[in-house]
Structure formats: C-alpha cells, structure tokens
Image (cartoon, rainbow, N blue to C red; front, side, top):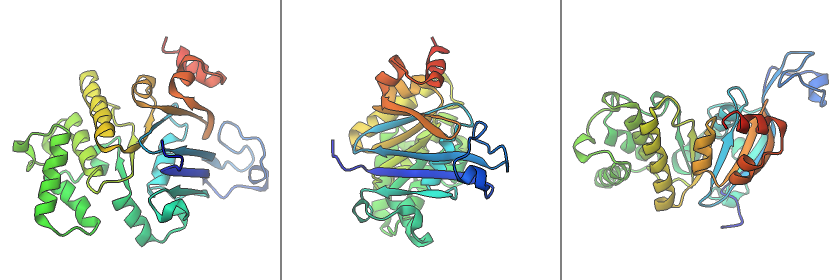
Length: 277
C-alpha cells in the first residue's frame, strides 16, 4: 500500500450557527449541540486518511454526521473549519477547501466520483445512461464523441447494464439499476477516489447483494480508493478494510474493520455491534 494517502482530512468541522465563546472555546456540548447558544456541530473536528486501493468505511446512526462529512468533501456543503488534501491534486500539498470555484469543479469532475443515496441527486433522469457518462466527461473537458461512446459502453458493461439499454433513460430503471448507472457515471473520468453515501439503503436485499458485489469488482478492476458511508454494519463488514465510527459529529473509534466489529472498545460501538447479534 502506498504510504501517501489518496485523501487526507484534518480537523473538519461543520457548525450550524455562529457559535458563542462557550462552545468555541471547547465547552461541553449536549450531544452535538451547544447548551448556551444552540449551535449544532454536525461534524466536530474529525480527521482521517484513505489510502490507495483501500475501502474506508464510515459507520454511525442517523444524525451522526457521516453524510454531512461526505457532502463537505464533495463541496456540496460549506465547511466551518478544517483542511483536506488529495494525493493526485498538487501532490497532496494544497488544501482543496481553500481553492476557488473553478478548481473545485475541476476536482469534482476529474479527481472524485460521488454516488448519492438518492440517484436523482447524481443522475439526469431524462438523459440516456450513456448520456449521463458523456455529460461527466464533457464537464472534464472531453470533446471526442467516439471516446465518450466507447467509455460509456465500457463502464455500463462493467456495471452489468445491457448494451440494448444504454440509450434508455434511468427514470425507466429500477433503484438498483439506477445506482449502477450512478457508479458508472462517477467512474467516467478515472477518479482517484470514489465517495459512496448509503448506496444500498432502500434496496431489496437481493439487489443490495448485487450492488455490493459490483463495488468489490469495481475496486479490484480499477484499483480505486473508496470512502464508504453506511449505517449498515453488514455492508461495512463485507466491504471495508478499515472503519471509523461516528457519533454526535465526532469519530469515537477507528481501526481495522474486523477489530472494530469483533472487539469494539467504545461503549457506543459496543451497543451498535451487539444490537445486531
């Protein structure tokens, strides 16, 4: 494994409300809320790294901050404080959060791929499946129609979308197929990291299994790094090499996935794991 991280996040904080001297100077919060001014710390001073070819799982209950963290990294959410670095952007030496909007668009279109829980956020439902991939390539500056068609065919075949349906709009597809089209679109420009936010939530168990198997195959084929957010420990166990546990906006435990799930140390993680036994 390459020792330089593909993604490095330092002290990321997302706070709703300006805050007050009490919470800004480290006063004790009630869960993730300041008892004095009411400011909510959706993400509270978290740090982690993702390495080449690795799947890092992020697990926690609803409201733990994991999806806010993911949206922040993809610039869908303004941050309050913190830094993030990508190994393939200026050799990991420039904080991506301080870049201008043009550079942030470049990073979104070329270096990161995002797969949302709701496919409607990641796909144009009236475009064809191939057209969705072409759109992502156009955003990155590609203008070669033959290259876009070839890439769309390659990626849609990789996610088991039949050639006969490539010109069909995702609105006609099942939820599982829409997620597979989203994954293919996210891979369009060979990103160095794929962000997966609750991608199996709401899918039937048999469809979940197919999507999870697809993610494993995608990682093996493209040797891509993945940041995987899920509240489902079975998904985390199946896919993640390492796992961080979030609770009330903070990372409370991290380590190898088997270690976290088989021998949890934090009281909350123990409750989370044992509730499924």
